[in-house]
Length: 202
Image (cartoon, rainbow, N blue to C red; front, side, top):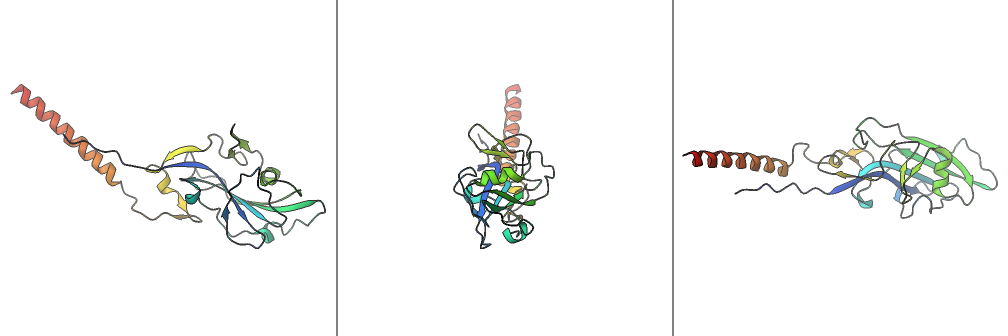
């Protein structure tokens, strides 16, 4: 008897990833520290991107080329404080829990105390923030309204998530071979059941 093996799909998670960029305007670096631990310096840029990712190596960077000079151009330096450029990328409809269009990306210049963390800089410009009991950042500026690091099957959602600054992942958008194989198996099993029933009547 033939049996259909389920399609093997890696699971991803829908969450806010945290990125850092130095004052020299280089590329984004995935932060190995959480926002509450990281301490950006004056002139640094921090970024947050909401997306579905399998792990840190698969995480999607914030889009755009905004840097500190552009974001904080109208915020003068002040003794006893530091300025941190904050880039907020709320992702795409494919990233959203309900697949609706999320808020537009935006940038803010946070003026905070010299020893402030990235989390404090974020809170200064993007409230309300929401954390779970494990201190995982769940929502920025109230988005999303619910959920926190939810598990998502890549066979359903994650393959549609844009990668690398918004470019869609390459690949066929049609049904997977596993899905087709499963459907064929169901048809064959149904035909076998009908044959068995007719054989018993005979």
